[in-house]
Image 1 (spheres, rainbow, N blue to C red):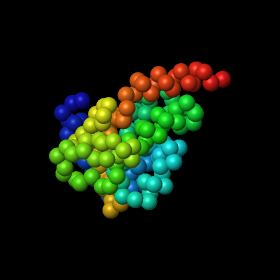
Image 2 (tube, rainbow, N blue to C red):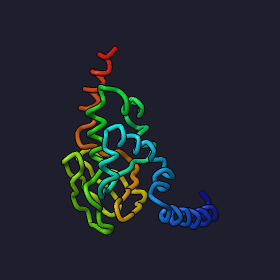
Image 3 (spheres, helix red, strand yellow):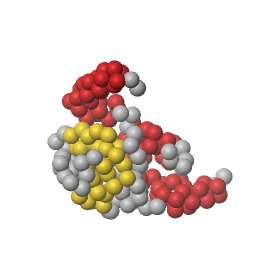
Image 4 (tube, rainbow, N blue to C red):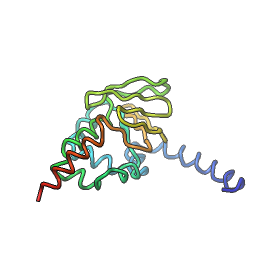
Length: 169
């Protein structure tokens, strides 16, 4: 990208981010393509829990879900993937609100295990993700991240689910 285009793009991007940060939480979620995340919470029966309390949500962008070894729809609907689905979405919800300028501390997820959240990254037991943006409200913090993180080894889940899916007619 030329220097002129960069100079023009930077202020536009900052203005867009500032405008989005002021938008209501539901608008911010839909504007980042996180509808899949909300569908996943609903399919794992976590949506009401998340709405009823103060939580920090680690919301992967759509391309992160595209990198899963199975389709997103299969993740939400196939019986062989119930455990993987619930584990994944429980691990992406942290109990309570993460402070804004914390220097890398562990936080307990609904899964019962910890994630480490720093000012610009989230570290899971398996995987790390860069925080692209955060949106805060009195009852929720949403951290938009570029990748999925996992509570357990994703290959183990993949092998078990694939064997079960192959055995299912």
